[in-house]
Amino acid sequence: MTRRIAYQGEPGANSHLVCKQHYPDWEALACASFEDVFAAVEGGDADLAMIPIDNSIAGRVADIHHFLPDSGLHIIAEHFLRIRFSLMAIPGTAIGDIRTVHSHVHALGQCRKVIRRYGFTPVISGDTAGAAREIAELGDPTQAAISPPLAAEIYGLEILADDVEDEDHNTTRFVVLSRELVEAAPGNGPVVTSFIFNVRNLPSALYKALGGFATNGVNMTKLESYMVGGEFTATQFLAEVDGHPEDTGLKHALEELAFFTTDVKILGVYPADAFRG
Image (cartoon, rainbow, N blue to C red; front, side, top):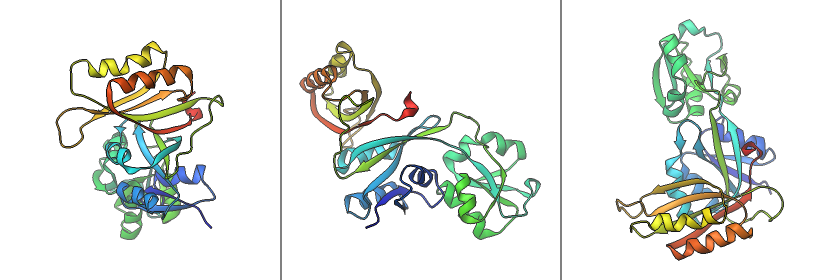
C-alpha cells in the first residue's frame, strides 16, 4: 500500500518540495488548508503530515500553534528548507512585458526588492504554487508569479529570474506529524523535545516553572505563549529544548516544571536536524 504524506498548498509549493526531498517514495497529498492537513492524518487518509512551523523572516506560523496542542498528533521529525523563489511567466514572456506579479502575501513581502525594481503591481494569491497555476491558466504575458522553482516545472512556466527573495538566509523549519508517538532513542545523537504546558496567571509563575531548566543546564531553544479559551492571558506555552526526557538534566527539569504548571504534554522527542549544527 502506498504511504501518503499530507501538506498544505498546491503541487509545487515549498511544503511539497520538502516532502519530495525527504519522502521521495511517498505519495504527497495536497490539502487546501492546515485544518485539512491535520484532518487527513487524524482520519487516516494520510500517514504523516509535513507542516511549516517557523520561518527565519516571517517568524512562527501562527495557525499551527493552535491546531497542534489538541490534534492528538505527535512530532516525529524536523526538516529545514532554504526558501528560494523564482519569477516565472508563460513561455516567451520578457520581464519588460510584466505588469502584475502574483504570490502568497508572505512571499510578496519577502521579495519586495524585485517587485520595486521593475515596478510590478503585487497581487495576493492563496499560496505560491497556486499563483503559478493561475498564471499558466491565464496565459497573459503581462502577469507573472513568484513561486518555488518546482512550480514552473509542474505548470509549464518559464523562469525569468532565480533567487528573487530579498534575504539569502530565508529558511523554513518543518515538522513531521504522526498519529503514533515515535520517540528518538536516547544516547544516539542530538535530540529535540517539544512540549506544551499551562501555568496559572500569577506573579512569577513562569519564572518558577522555567527555573529547573536553568539549574539543570538544559538549553531551551523555543518558548512561545498564546491565549487559550478566549482569555486575554498568556497561560499556555509551547517550548522546545535540547535533550531527551531520559537525560538526567532534562528529566529533573520536567519534574520541577510539573510543580508549577497545571498540565505538561510532550508533543515529540525527535532527532535534531543537521541544519542546527
